[in-house]
Length: 463
Image (tube, rainbow, N blue to C red; front, side):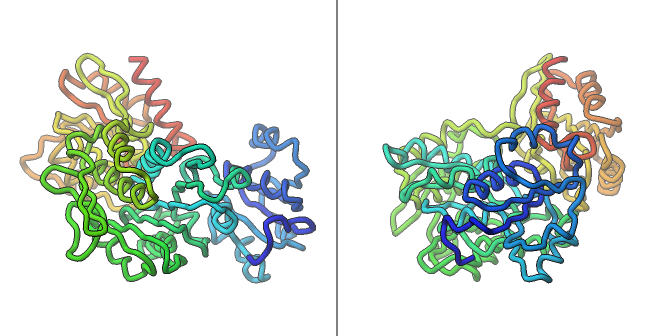
């Protein structure tokens, strides 16, 4: 898009989706003088609060569907994160030569800030939050700010006009955003690649291609950080055009980055080795979170954050809501909210974070993923699994298929989350951990994983 920053006057932009990204983009483009059409498949009555929020702007709406006539005279079609890129209207735009983009693409094209972009199948929100906190403590000063956003919940396009050269923007990027993008951040990280969103992408190869786009448009003076402990991620190093950094339990010969060695998180960069902290000093549970802290430390250090600030955050950061979040202790059993676990792999990481007897609450809606590895770990590590939601039958079958003769895992099925909490409260004993780590999405019962986690908190506090 070879246009100036303020050249939207007289141009038409169509935005699909009235969620956070769509609303922020509409406000930005309208402020630049564009003719903005906002479209959503939901009818107006279901979007009352969104329409009220944008009532001060001169916008055109097409609600209850995406009529093809919207594209007449359109200069750019923008998709919000949850909008599929293969909609008929999107295909029509491609056929008509209308560029298709999203708010993240526009932000990267226009920002003066240095951008750290982080993607991966798991851990990207925690890692993004860690980097931003490290930056706020060790990087911010008068006239220099750290911004946090992207897929994490705050569309950075909303802050674009307030950013200055020298600022640092820490940006979480999803596969849905990346599959449209032809611009990469100056510092890009891929934390891991595991099967996810196959209900949207169809197959792992397509999902992997979308994630890899965070690297494809980097320049020779840019930096990429890849997990060397995850073979699928490490294979992407052939795409790296600039400086390659690695992180993992060890570092390949001749590579710099971060590693865990002799019980310590360490940086090995430019022929120097620096200790971040002891593994046991990381306040978040689980080996996966130690890797998240390690990746964040490498990224922050690369961006110029002093080691003291990195070390402080590594040892004090308590985590992000809905990610192995301790809700309360009830009659001697600790209840944890890991509603973010919308894939079997994420649930496996949560299960492996505990040594205590586990009562696992799992279910929700399946994303066309393989549950066999989950079933293996459950029948070895979980004493009782309470299954709820649409995926309960598929998960139960997977556990039964994987069951070994010595397994003592009990399975109970209930219709919904409230029933799962009620049953767990009845059966959990002192010393147990009751863990909500569903492995499926929330969409069969809740708007999103945050709503599921918040409802779980209320249910547990009501016991």
